[in-house]
Amino acid sequence: MTVILDRPATTPRTLVSPDLFARLTARIAVDHPEHAHQAELIMEQALAFLAACAVNPGVGLGPSDTVDIGWHTFILYTSEYAEFCERVAGRFIHHAPDDVPGETGTGNSLAATMAAMEASGYRVDPVVWPTSAECSSGKCNQCYAGCSDSPKPKKAVG
Image (tube, rainbow, N blue to C red):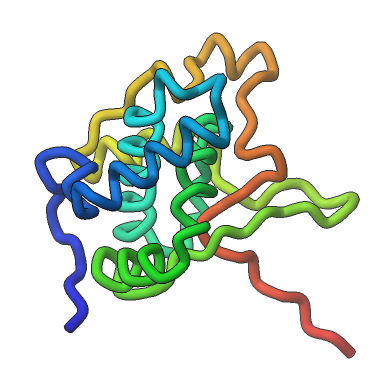
């Protein structure tokens, strides 16, 4: 049975089991020791981001670099990630890096992503999301390759 998330959980971490949350945060701490002290925050914000993607299909929301660590980590657990996507979004939430040479990213701006998260009822933590000052200084990029939550339409061949 598919359940579409129609209102946010109390906290994003309740979107997954406590065991899975612990496994994901432990993986972040091991794979990204420079962010070990933020592992729980990163995963909570990644889950809130994915929940916002669930209720905003096709918008092309994209994470901050730090939040993308949580998304990448979750994707490694393919079975759990696929189940989460089906339960929360009713569809698979694809991770689509835009790394085609000469093309710009198709993901939405971080400001639009943060607004969508807040509109979905989730708190956006400025510790892992850039401020407007960081954006104006050119440090406001989405993922290292312009990742977004859905692929752009393919061009017709022929």
